Image (cartoon, rainbow over all chains, first blue to last red; front, side, top):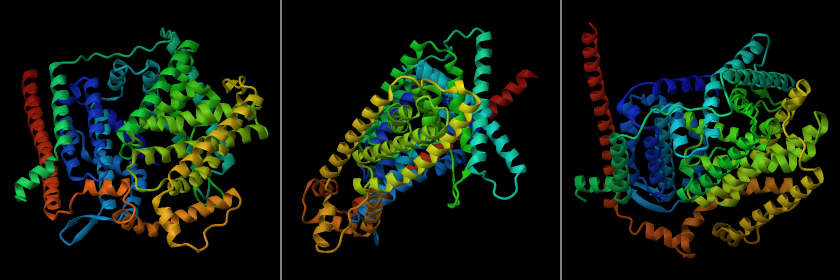
Length: 266
Length: 356
């Protein structure tokens, strides 16, 4: 848990400000396509490994057209991996029936389902990250409102995102001030922690009051208006339909197996 | 304990998503009707506070580890349950979208586990009746700690139920519970203490900061808490008994006569359960043998239908094909990037000359 994680949020916003054919698509198109992708990936039976491979095409193509560096996505994947790993790692221990042989190796069902969990994790998480990195929180929020998300919630996400950096800066300054004035262990005692956190909370309450007054003085009347300038174009229809056909094809037939069969002649 | 997309089946994820979306809609409508427009920036800033506060850790004496504030109960104390739920949902959404914590399909699960239980069950039924009008002291501490513990216990139990129902993990229900609940008991205690300390500090400095303390009277609160406790226990035991777990049964048959565990206090029971889960793990080979031969239940038939014959050819074809598809995807991506760079470069050059 370092400051690096928060700086990387800024990195995602920078990426969202780029311009590419994927960036120009309507947010609704990208949200619906990503959801279709995730549902398709998650609907496979638990031992499926090879049929998942064609699905890597979607995040890879989007990343490359949109110019999103793969290192960023990989780092985030690594940070988030532990919980899926912890739950998945029991499968090889618990299920040892041999279901497949590859040369001299016997592969048990548990290892297959473990590999399947990890693959699904990589696929779904990278798709969600790519969605944000090529859309940005503002266009995403506007798109979600038009897809039926309550305005309160969309506005809340946008405000939270805006003040994330401000509040985190506040907290980091506080921790730095504490570290510079203390000797020995760098984590505060509980009493000190309570007062630091309490002060941070008081500051946030005051900041919220200030923001409210600033909003009211600029004509805020209880509803926050969100700009949503894009419209569905032909490219959006093509994008959505094309990927949907691909997902359905890859879900219905095991493309890896077909190709492998063709190559090896088995 | 954020659920990831990889651990949820579409059916479970979809159901929970519907539940979560319904709750968000309901809370949104409640907030709109209340017409309290100064809540909007306050909610945004407090959501950011939940992130920011994770930058500050405190050292837990004697353990060498550190803890930090989670936020559910504190938000409910400051904002009231409806606004607090929206804030937690937004925090989870930002975590899913920017930090890869959780996922889009699993968002419904996470919103219910980490939002609904602390804010709509633990806070109104446990925390608020105990705290009452207290601005500090024993009642505030007791209420916050019990509320945080209860919220997390229900949440982690829900994680186990959702994972088990999704059928992705091989971990049996009982040992999963035995792993999750004690860990989250400790986390809940730490979080509750931190919540109480911060709430006490802020309420002393700014006594008006607390939302909606009046409302449910404590007698009704206690009664409904008991009802929830009974209900939870009922559901728990139902799960425990309807899933007797072929493996346990096999283990009992095999280790017949050997000592098992001494039932006693609940703490002892929990420790025993953890022990059980740990020592059982090596014994799980029995399951494979069982599935293959004796039981012939749903599991065995499932497995055999899914894997009709162990064919080496099929496996090799799958491996080769999978690798190739990955390679092709990668090179398509790389090609697109080169193409994009080329075009961008040409456009840039073009623009350069145009401006000149």
